[in-house]
Length: 53
Image 1: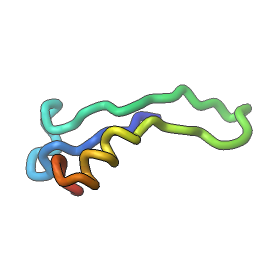
Image 2: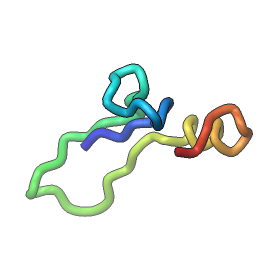
Image 3: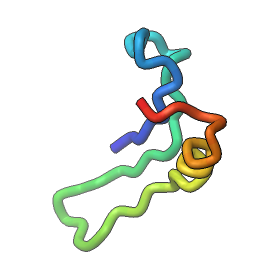
Image 4: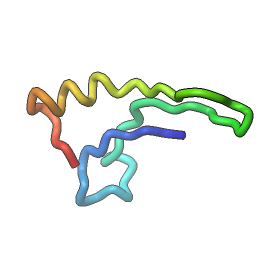
């Protein structure tokens, strides 16, 4: 699973419009929660320095 921050919603097919925040390898044998590091992206969104797409 990969989690991206969208930098340019109008051009999401471009690699430059996405920023990889975190990734995890998930198997069918795993149990429980999967935690992704998105704190910095959320902080930027909340303080207005990044857009919410």
